[in-house]
Image 1 (tube, rainbow, N blue to C red):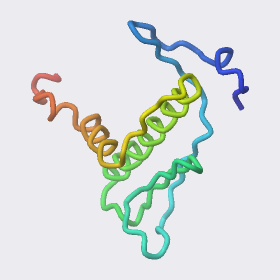
Image 2: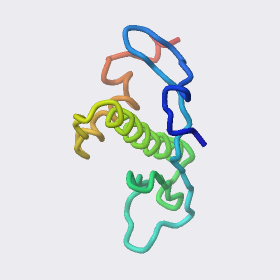
Image 3: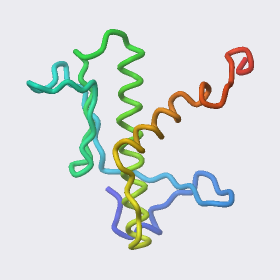
Image 4: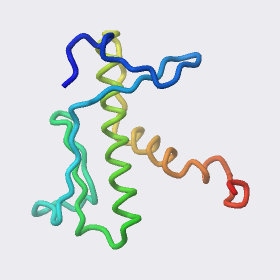
Length: 122
């Protein structure tokens, strides 16, 4: 478990004009075979408990399970970065749910947003 002294826990991964760090978080991701009654989401992340869930019965293929899991983990990463920024500065703007989902879609489908074809990737 990381100590409360963040500066001693940071392990630089890459430094450019900004600082990028790697640090353990307290977040957890769980796979549930069946979601709770009434839950229609394929996956869900709860920022207050730092828990993410992928509901396996809501998916038809493994690729969708992987995509949902990545999606929920990006929610957790955005939440963690926001927490770190709040510790450093008292002024942090949290993303609303719609904006956060737009950002996640653009991350997961970056090649489509940037107009990159499969041929260019190979």
